[in-house]
Length: 294
Image 1 (cartoon, rainbow, N blue to C red):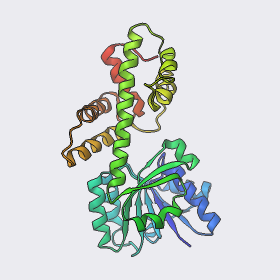
Image 2 (image 1 turned 60 degrees about the horizontal axis):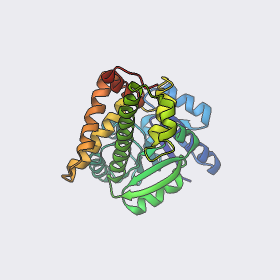
Image 3 (image 1 turned 180 degrees about the vertical axis):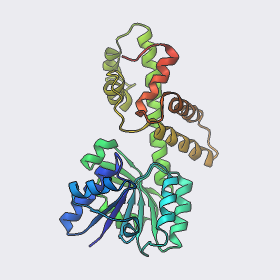
Image 4 (image 1 turned 90 degrees about the horizontal axis):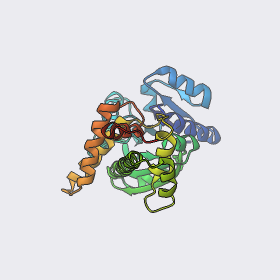
């Protein structure tokens, strides 16, 4: 039986680890959890049947999942776990990390007899709760196939390339989210200033070629309503857009829209607040145009 472990019980990690615990109960196995705030791990164990353990105990699992804010936090955990890691363990990092960090971390862990896969996820907290996340995996094919049966939180898992490819794809995916969201904001605030009913305009756009997830879901549900529920922090999206710029620069590419969007989201995070929902970036557009999108 395979023992899994999960580090990072945040908005995404908590429900992801719950699916691992559910699968473990079905298989008669164990699903270990650890969080910097011990009470979170204990609450997860009480609610979902996982096992709250110390950090060194996590290192004795067969498959270790991490879901942390950035690759820097993963580096910190690697440093703490290095003396305790079981040889043959596979580390699956679901953080939206940096491709360069993934390559470095794989080399570092390989010296300890540990495999490393970058495996960021997409689908938001709703997908995490439903167990329908899309996982993009970077690393050797054989290692990817070995962990595939244990991705209990996934609705779709795609091997996108070698180490770092998962993080690269995730950054570009989130950059496209940012580009679509920002473009929608600029267009809709112009319509609002022209006296057009924004909701009516969205009805047209969403039945036409200009539609996107931003116009179909994010803007009507979060911006027009002025609710901005925080499911994905603006600061994290700004971080991901910066990684996308690094991906472009690593191949000496030319991507002026990507570069400009990254700068705009960095400015929005500093101006609106990095802890706000990512859709709150449009508040900067509203300030620039002295008009709310509603």
